[in-house]
Length: 225
Image (cartoon, rainbow, N blue to C red; front, side, top):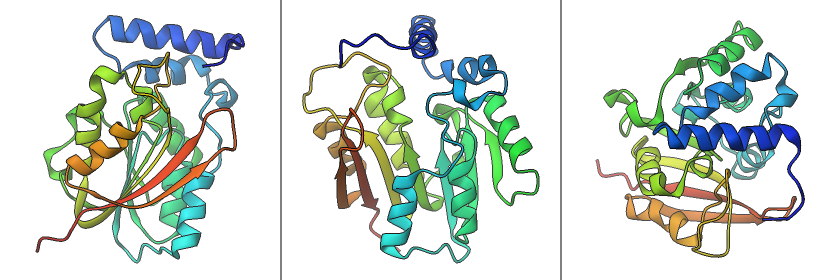
């Protein structure tokens, strides 16, 4: 981590996250961030109000079209990634633990085909298990403490159907030592954890577009039918 001081909003978000972890609800800090933003997307550091460029590049590079296949967006935030996938022909479900974020999505995209839902990653409907042809996870895993890392990766992996694809975008750290956070970037062993959960790494792309190295990894689940 840099010794450069955090801007006031990021410092406040770290305080919110630390309080949530102390209270035993480390995922619930997202709601407070969205609620205190009061409709200002600039107050949510990860809200770009445009689709994730790493997702769009992958879709273009692989010439992926939905053709009615099911897709799930984890921690969908303000909905831009979900809308991008719907625009590519996927039947999209998108969820976030934050009620405010989901209400914001519905306000931004009132005529959307996306099924937006309020859901806790650790308490999703059992019918979602291995139910989605494509799953997109961008920076949700790294937003939760390391003590939840294996459980979180396991939950994300279980959404992927037989023959399905998981695309993960996350910051990477080059040590197994626990970093200061949030976020808590993933180590190589943590990326490997997805494979321990029954997925196979197909492609890995590394980027140095900002102060933290970003990795995009494509995983598949072998079709067992």
